Length: 358
Image (tube, rainbow, N blue to C red; front, top):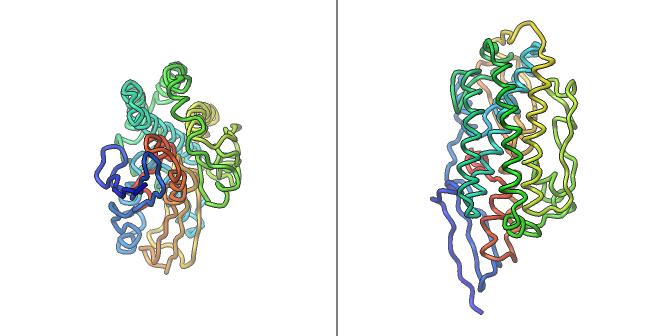
């Protein structure tokens, strides 16, 4: 039987500006090659021409679904160079923002996963629920998508009055909505048939490939930077890490669904234990010469930042290692799968093109 080669993307409403080169034999994918780079903007090189604080709005745009995690990794590296201790209150506010960001990112993924599988109700429900968290972020930061809120030394503003009560009301509502999401989507027999046993990544291959985040934890690997190398006072909050061993598209969906429940609990505990005091300290415009490395657990997995300083007000070198780039080897799961399973496997990896390309 002869094979057919074709491209999926790079212009596509679901996968973004990203192309996959597919070789098909009958209904079976015999080769799938990811072809990233269509939204590469040279952010790392541009950062060398801007001062440390000026880089924050540009760097966070590499993943607009999870901006707080990006800016936190960047800020932590600068704080290590500057030998700055962030106030406890700012540490907890950062946790609140990062977990809000995780929920928003997972809801974004859930909505696109739904539309990829022909479940338009799930698309509308998830985006609608995501908007209530966007409203919370706007009340805290003044902006709805990109905040420039987490900065070197802490956060830009203190929490506004009444935000704790508003957040608790939102989380109470969201807990009920999650049960409805489960009933209509995750427990839906059609969704289970479309995802169970599809795109299986076993534990050994997950470790070998170096995948990260929910993709890794769905294959039975308990890897989470919040627990492995606690940062920003995560060690002061008790929470579990959801692990599944099946390694299929359904397990990857379950991890993200459970993480939304856990993130809601973390936010509650962060507000309950929120210290008084300053929300930021001053960081000098010029940081000392040296090197610094930081990493955080973003919504899609491990996000690392490496900075070399020459003692000036601008980075000599900035390097970001992003979870979407780390998860690119996961596209090998498409090989030997049916063409009809391609949307399921692709979305189960939660790949974000600008996050990989930068």
